[in-house]
Length: 248
Image (cartoon, rainbow, N blue to C red; front, side):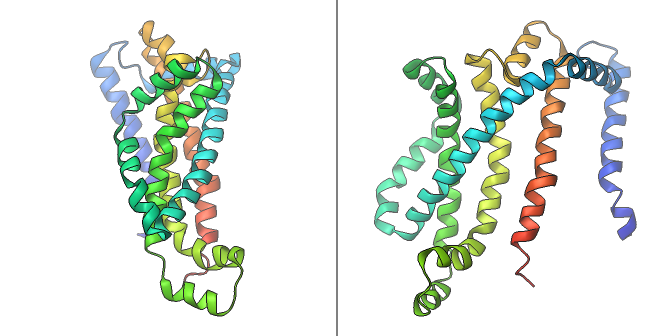
């Protein structure tokens, strides 16, 4: 059974493609092209350089905004989780920013700061930051006080305490913020690009939407999903495994 389970992801993908192919043949419409048609469009966009250019523009925005959001959000979340007065003061701020629709914040950033790259990054950052803060704050609240007292008794420096005591306990919360952040942030970036950028995957999706070119829409969507899955399997999972090596 364990050997069979290794093939489950491949079998699941094959089943998905089979269902897609059957539906495409049954409908026989340009509104649902077959997997081979989408693959052909994907290949043409790839060899023309358009796919790599627009995908690269989106990834740069994702990396910059995601990195800033994680670093700043982790610092703020840790501070709020360990300081009840700060947490009580800023709690309403978090609730407000969590409930402002992403579209509203994107439009306001473009109106206030112009249709430029800085506004695009800021819009994504503002939409993602509260989620990181809330997740890390909950992790900071759950820190084992006995371990913190032990670190204080052994006179560990703040850096050592953060590295050896706080970080291992916060790790599950940070990984949760990272995974949910990647899923959320690229969707926001697509809206940002659709509304105010002249390149990127979102810009291309808007263009093909106007042309009712479903095959190209699916080709660009699949390309980005492949990249996100690559990040998950080559970076996040190895990092998660390495960070959890201290557990039994």
